[in-house]
Length: 255
Picture: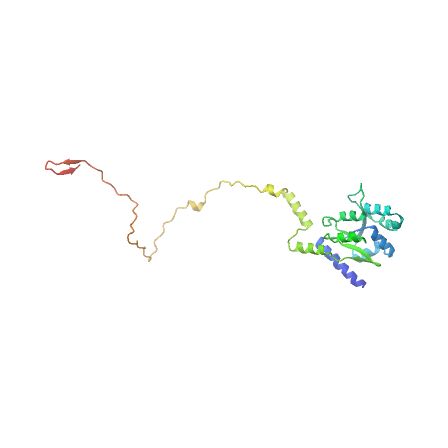
C-alpha cells in the first residue's frame, strides 16, 4: 500500500512540474489544523514530507496563521510551537490580520504564481483550493500524509493551454517583457490608426508602350459582316470653294 501511495505521489508531482513549472525546493504553506493532526497522529512533518514528495521542501507559514493559533489558546499550543519553527512568508495582512484560511487563499490567488503547496485539514479551505488551477493539496488521513490528485480545475486548465485556448501566466509575462524591450508596450488600440498612404512611383508596367499584335502566318484575317463599314480614321480632303465666272460664250468656269 505504501509503494502504491508513493507512485501516485510521484505521478502527481510530475504533473505539477511539467504543467505548472514547480521546482525544488517545494514551498509548502501549513496551517494550524494540519500541524494539530500531525501532532495527534505522531507524524514528523519535517522528516516525512521530503521523503513522500521525493525532493527538497521548504516548510513555511504566515503571520495570520500564527495569530489565529495564539488567539485560540492552549488547545492548539502544540501546533503553534511546531509552526514557529518554520519559515514565515510575508502576506498582505501585516497591519490587519485575517483568518488563516483567507490568508492562505490570498497567497495562491491568480493561479498560484509562487508555486505553493497547501497543507490543511480545513474542509472549506480545501474545497476552495480545488477551484484554483495549479495548487497541490496535502492533508492527513489517519496517520499518513496524502497528496491529493490534480483537481478537475487543474486538468481543464492544462487541456485548455495545450489546445491553444489559454496562455499560461509565464507566457503572458514573457510577451510583456518582449513588448517592453521592443518599446511597443501600451494599448494596442492606440497604435492601430489610419495610416497615411505615401505617394509612390507609378507602376512601371503601366508606362510601357502597347505592342502591336503581329499577324501570325497561316491565320486568315476575319471578314467583316455584311453591312459593316470599314472605319476610316483619316479625313477626306475638301476642295476649296472657288468663284464661278461666266465665260463669254455663256459657260461658267470656276477660278
